[in-house]
Length: 166
Image (cartoon, rainbow, N blue to C red; front, side, top):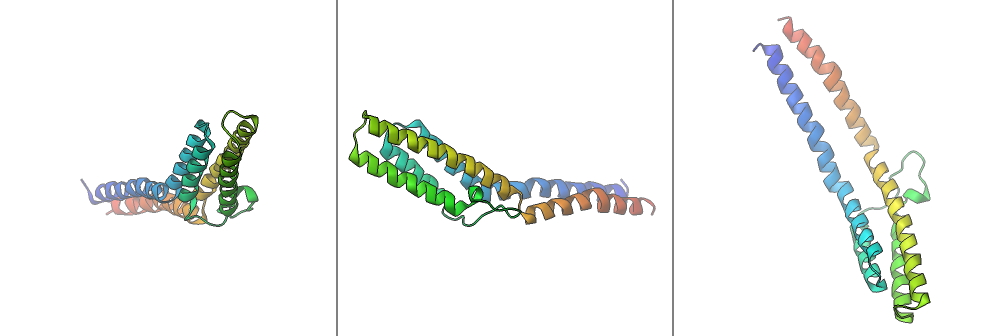
């Protein structure tokens, strides 16, 4: 194999490794806790006990604890504000616990509180989906993607072409 081919194979191997490793690392460090929070909220939707709804919602809130602010950097809205999402989760927990203490399972008031909590959890899950989308589209991630494309499609072929003339 000539020098140019070895260079191209090595460069593209490194680029493919980076293209796989960086998004995986970002997913497990940033996105995965959000997915776990959604999983806890899904579990809260499947139970008929207000105390369990509050418990699963508390676990989801714990997964969101390290996050603050609004990841939507173009046009931030309340829908993507993580602190507001956490506030909604705290309100769901408080409402569930208060209603569970004041009413008994099987009553209309208990069922109404459960339905209200489920509706609010659906809304929060939708908001978390929006947050996840904006966490992927951070300026650093976009910059890294553009830099990767420049290296992969312009710089490596250019160097390969120059080396093949030797």
